[in-house]
Image (cartoon, rainbow, N blue to C red; front, side):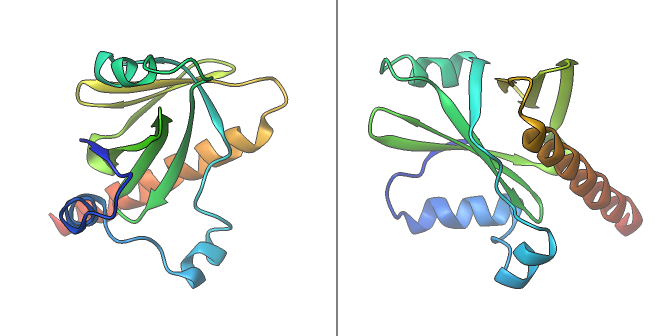
Length: 143
């Protein structure tokens, strides 16, 4: 789901928290060695996201925040902040090229293009897939 998170709206926050969990505590953030991605360059996006991004002429950047049950893909358009909420069970990550990642949820996607020197982003994506694997393993055991 795509949300406008520019304003402090308790209903939106509650819906995000119910879908992917509350943010990690400080101790958990330290244990994970950070929960936020470096700045990511958006090269392509689904039509819903693309229609928001073309409203201004700035370079399109995104960031990813890890949550216990999924991720938030955040980006800005004009003066508004948006978040694509993706629970782990709906998250699909493709690495189509050495420097291209595509993040999918249902009919939404964001394609991230990296430069050759962006090793930190590769490490973050490995952490993301590891957390997804652990979360999906826990989910299967619950069934």
